[in-house]
Amino acid sequence: MKGILKSFVIHTFVLWLIATYLGGVQFGNDPKILLGGGLALTLVDMLIKPLLNLLLLPFNLVTLGTLRWVSSVFTLYISTLLVPGFSVVAFKYPGLVTNMFIIPPLSFSVIGAYIIISIIISIIVSFIFWLIR
Image (cartoon, rainbow, N blue to C red; front, top):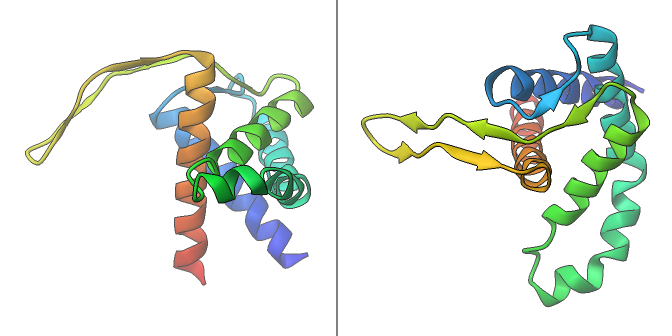
């Protein structure tokens, strides 16, 4: 139970972080919808994602794991279907310029937004779980 609660808090925080600083995730500035999205993402990640990984295992073996992001996209999509008001939309990333590198402005369609956001969610959630271990 403690693990589910920890996962729920982390997923909700990451969704809020992405919606605030990156864009592409909409929850209508309603904390209930954000909490519902975090709960749905947590439950889908714990219950359905292992089944998706099992179904996609032959493709992951053939591609040496490069298509593992597909299961993350499906879990994010299923989460948006379960929570009304929680959605992933097309967005334009304004870009980033630092002394070390430049990321140009990019426009993402809805499918591209699902892919990018699911990859970013996976990376940040994995990093946070690694930090608190």
